Length: 214
Image (cartoon, rainbow, N blue to C red; front, top):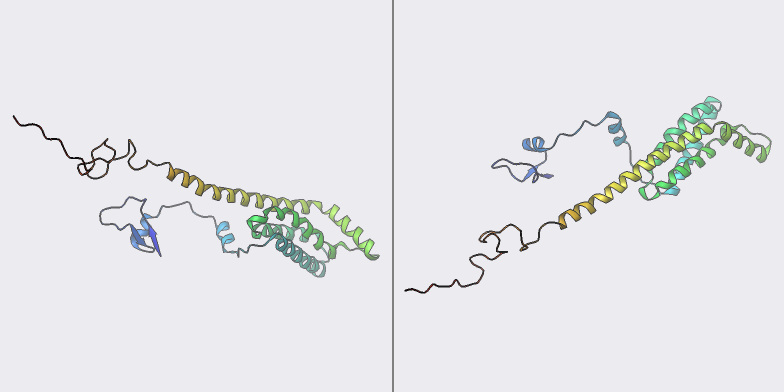
């Protein structure tokens, strides 16, 4: 692996391309700000890219599993379920692909409603179970709004960063095409060219005139 050091001032005898890990490569690299430990921990996590349908299935399956575990271990504690809903919402917004970022705040509330079924505690058939789920959603709407807000914020930040990455190549290409063209007036003279002649030097093909003698 090699690192190009063309834009960094090089001393005499310093190669343009340096091998990564060489003594001069570390000194040539610009020193940036230290990365926070939280960001480093997030970078170590897996980075899958789920479609909108895959993100919805992932969030629903995880919340349904957490709901059953909450009912078996903690007798259906809504506080524990709501606290676990927040990181699931964040992971759903982080792992959905960039083309389906808008689906993250939509599939997260659906996953919350699916996972709340085991801890709703409804009785009396399908109608009683449905009424228990609606009641649980109304009572614990704060956790629902909080997880949806977390997913929406993460999706918005990712969208803004994606738009910034797309604008950088356009700015660079427009800046490179605006440079002075070869042979144009005002362009620097090349080797063997007289300044201001536009590429006409001594070897341009013209025969110099001779002065008459006497």
